[in-house]
Each structure stands twice: as C-alpha cells, then as structure tokens.
Length: 379
Image (cartoon, rainbow, N blue to C red):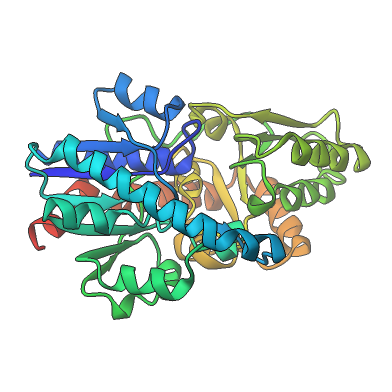
C-alpha cells in the first residue's frame, strides 16, 4: 500500500512535524510505503529526507485566515480567492504529474487547514483521509479562509476522518462524516528510553511554542506565586519562538516578577527529552489544546503533568492518577506546591509510573501503525 501525505510544514520540527514523523514511522513498520508533499524547503524537510523519507516540494495555499478580520480582509477576499484557487489548481496538476505512476492508494491530508487533498485524491482516483489536529479558532485565533460551511462540507465528505481528540471530533461535527475515528497522535516509541525515576533537579518545565496561543505567561505567573514559598526551584521555557515581539513581552513579564535569575527562555530544541527527565513538573497552560503531544512526552519521561482542565488536556490527564488538573492560576499554584512538597513520596512515584504505563498502552508508534493500516484497508 502506498500513501501520499500532504502537510503544511514550513519551519522547524515542531509538534505537528514530529507527529507526522511518528505517523510515517508507524506506517513503515506496517509495510506501508509513504511519500510526503511539503510546500517549502525547511528544517522539517531536511530532517525527513535525512531519515530516508521520500519528500517532494510543491507549494500550495492554505485555507486559513486570521479570525476577527476587518475591512482589509474583505477587500482582499475575492482577489485572494481567485488567485489561490488558480494557484492550487496548478499545484494539484504538478502533484498529479509527480505521482501518477507511483500507484498511490490513499491521499492523507495532515491538517484541517489543507484543503487541496480532496482535489489531489480525485485527480489520482484514490481515497482521501483527512486528519484533524487543531481547532483553528480556539487555539490559534484562525478560521477557514473560504468559510466554515465549505470546510465542514469537505471534511464530512472525506472517505475517512481522524480526529486527534474527542474535543476535535465534536468541534468539526464528525458525527456527520462518512467514517470518522478518534485517534490521538503516536508519540512514544517503546523501544526508546522512557520513565526516569531519579530526577534530582528542582526544576519546573514549560514546553511548547513561545506564542500567545500556548499561554506561557500563565505558566510564568503560576511559577512566580509558587516560587515565593519554594525559592530553590527554577523554571525552563523550551520551544520555538513565535515572534521576537512576544519573546520580549515574556521577558518583560519575567523581569516585572523579578524572576530573571530563576526563569530561562531556552528556545527551540530538537530533542527535549533531557529537559523532561531533569524536571519535576511540566505545566500545560494552554487552555484550548487539541491534544498536546508534549503532555504525553512529559508523562513518558517521568515528568509529572499539571495541566489546564479543558479541551484535549482534560482527556489525557486523570486528576490524581496520571497527573493533575487545575481550573485557575491559584489552584494551579496550590497543586504545584503539593506535588513538589510530596515529590519523593510513594504517592507521586505512583502517579509517574501510572502516567508512563498510560502512554505506552495508548500512544505507541506500533499501536498507531495497526490502527492506520486497518483504516486504510477499510476504505
């Protein structure tokens, strides 16, 4: 079986890129041949090709625009729609020419913002699978450029849909789809080193893109209140920088809270596993997280998760069993203090072990490959 993945990666290996890489690993372990279309040369392209994945560059326009748009959007709407439509029509033709002789069986669109997948599948006369990984409006303040009605109609008419969480499934009305499953991303490889139960550093971790949507400011304020009674703890913020302007805003917040000597903005790191293993608690402060692969990575590497009690995070973390949930910053600070005060206790070690088992049982690459193979064969 041959599958063509259409993805929108244009930058470093972020969460969506790593999820796609794990998905390709899962496919290849099941004997599925994979190809990838990307819109631009980027670090993700270099990483994929370095690891033997057959990638092609064909640029195309995404179906996405900023929410709460004004007059400028409406003035540009018709020209952009005409230009974007013609551009993507050419892109579909280029992709068809590349793959018409490769006996593709399935076209797999890797995000809700990619709407050329149906046209590619139709041109190649194959099945189309749509992977829904983001809310768009709730998590990133975006919305479909051509409107929700058109996008939902396309999604509901796909041959199959994969929603990465119950929250995403409900958000896109997947009950109306021809075929839809809820399947979280593959995150962990049970062949690699996981849970470490001897963390000695008194360190709190935020991991995710340093941007407004991921709410690192919430994590910083939680740590600030916590630090007043736990002055021997430090905090690391690890992740790609959304913009220098926002980074400066966060540095200003750190300075105003007098945390310059204990809070570090590390920036993008390709392998975050060391930071998980060195940290005692991981704060997932994003309120509208579709799933949060970093939450699972933290669990897998023995870092106790303290997450917002909403969206995909609430589906991953069972409060007091595989981690802890909070409803506001005050309760988060109280729980963070409780976790760290009892860190060496059997209770907290049990939480770490249960979180690790939960990850291995539900988010392994090998398990994910079997789900994808069954889905593709059933089309």
